[in-house]
Image (cartoon, rainbow, N blue to C red; front, top):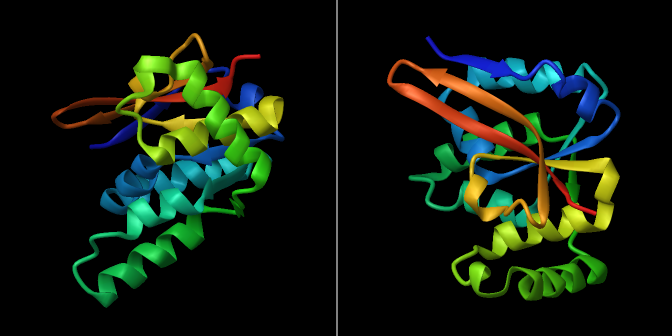
Length: 166
């Protein structure tokens, strides 16, 4: 049985804020919709806005085996998210800033993760990132504010709740 275990302070940390969802959230939700949708709805019921960027949706939708599967994935993404953050000039500028801040450690960073980080930089104290890609968001740039563990019959997956370290 799959179970989502959150730290006791999760809601108090993110209440009345936005959570930016990474691609792995959509993938895990599509594989285990009942558990993940209940969890995401619990967040929404606590005045938390779930958002993402188009690059995440592109990553999630690409490779669908047929139009039916594509539409299912698209509908799931619409059901989960409250808002899509548009990529603006200042977010582009933040991405270039982060390229410099990451230095050599950003060599293998995906463009999507770079733009997620750029959104965290733009909105600072009002937005968090939910991701399973914990090595893509170094703690000298981003702060881990909470941890979520997903217990599966064959192991545990951990998600981090990150915020730009200001």
